Image (cartoon, rainbow, N blue to C red; front, side, top):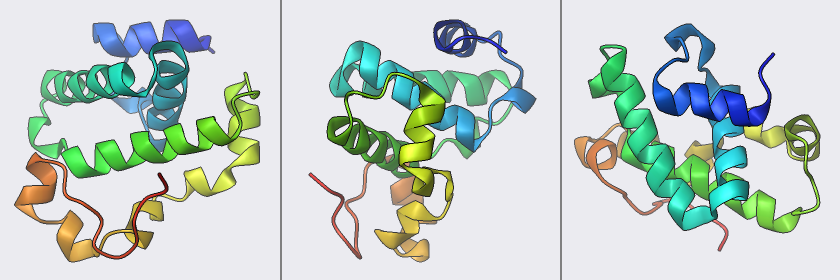
Length: 132
């Protein structure tokens, strides 16, 4: 298993195979890059990286701006709550709700997330505001 730095580098360089990038891996990437770069720079790096990754694997249409940013914001919020956690597995143990892929749907209606607008650009939550 790759360490966090090697994992992020493999992802960002395009060397990571598509079948090795699932929900947990998205979380790991966000956790690592937010800790390393800060939320703002990590957001730019992650969104560009996921767009490149999707295009590289022939799935550019799968990129979803609101969903991507929602997870970044949620992970960043939890990192702010527990900046002392330095291991990803410990972070997940502290915040197991992150493994629930439906977590964004506590904040957005499914119809909103399914919209072309939400896919193309950030759309504010329409059910419950994200934590600040």
